[in-house]
Image (cartoon, rainbow, N blue to C red; front, side, top):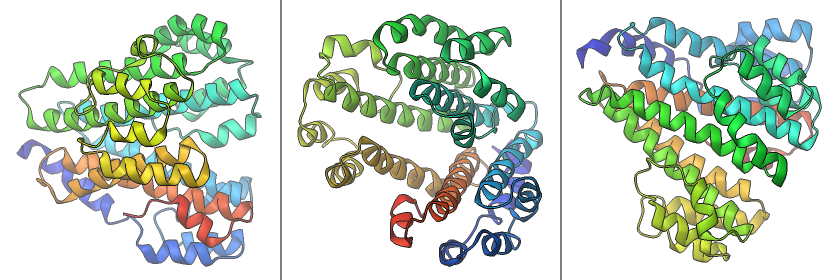
Length: 352
């Protein structure tokens, strides 16, 4: 494991730039974009935000600067991983392409504006900002898929295969899950090629946990649509750890949220699921349930800062810590821009 000594030394340096709770408090207490920019000037985000607000003053410029910092930080990570170990960093960052394509097709599906969709993406993967802008400018979902195909993008074929079902049903789930199937299959296959490597094994286990979360959320969506377990089975992503197909089908079969949570009672996700149920019952939004599961995985990931300092644990921990930090900061900026109060903004954040 000593072969990650250089990479993890660099990651520890980046970890020191993560913000303390004090900065969250100060940003939440700020009253204007200008005051917020001054606070950010004391942090690693300062130069990116200062450059962004020149072209786009106000809260939108601040958010653009945050996204630029995230993209630059993660590109830096890939650059200092050796050729032998680069697959670890690229596997972690590859999910940004999936998240970005999902954001774009969701935006196209609901008829969101160019500005609304572009604000939802983060250019931190293979799809750079110019490529993402081209996708957002596409006329519709079919044109998005056509562009990805022309570019030879790895996940264009699954999208093409899933498009007829989306076109006939009008439901996004087939398209979104086609991306999850392809990403997780590709990632696990790559990591399995290094199965005797502890770093690959650790990352593989973490990805398998993510697959469980995808399947849990899919089961909840399908149960709310009263999908039969037999019809829902095709949406189950293989490769998870503690939420096998039987539990998935049991959850799909149930329509009462509290009964669905009971299926998870003997899994490591039970406590997170209970918290998710509480938030769901309070808000009526499935997204509140999903946020509780996200909080669980962020906390699990950041605990890895305390694991073996020469393993891929540092990469996993930093990736989630940085992503969560930028997500929190964007929540603050966007909340301030629409007049949310401090308590509402805090409730949407995940503080670890």
